[in-house]
Image (cartoon, rainbow, N blue to C red; front, top):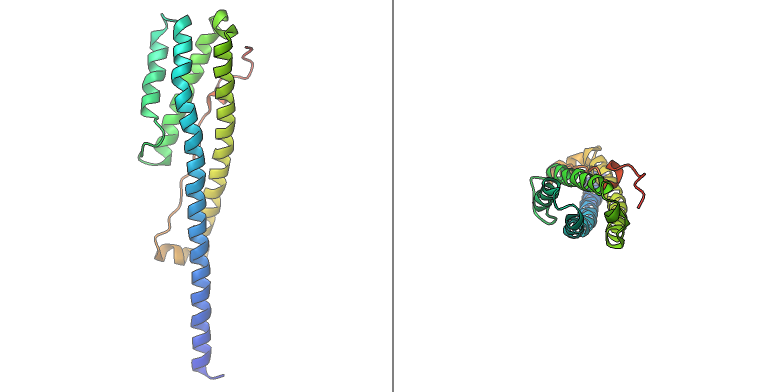
Length: 187
């Protein structure tokens, strides 16, 4: 085999390797997008549950309007589907919503009739279930982000990633209301 044949073979191998790496980068980017959609579904469920919680508590604790208004205000800023500055900004808003929900449940502790209410118990159970699902979705998303970032930063994939503008993805960390309010809430 002459030098031309060797060069052609090397160029073909390099092209095949580049195509393979490019396809892996695309697959990882799509996994991150899919995982984010899973988080968004859970955030939407939580978003839709908040008004029911607020209304239930409002019936028992009408004079605690500051807490109730705070939850409503934070909820309006954390609307799922709204394009924010990025994952980090979304995480900060969702953490604020979790903290306000924690205050809402702390407020419910002062009202035994509210805690005993079947409606409140169902809403609380739904929120805990949604937050469990959100935690699973967040783990899946962060795993997809980790895999994507490892590929984007690893040699020789980083050369292909730079050439085609693949970028690092942000991790999504929020503090869930179920984690914030100690699990010793007896309903």
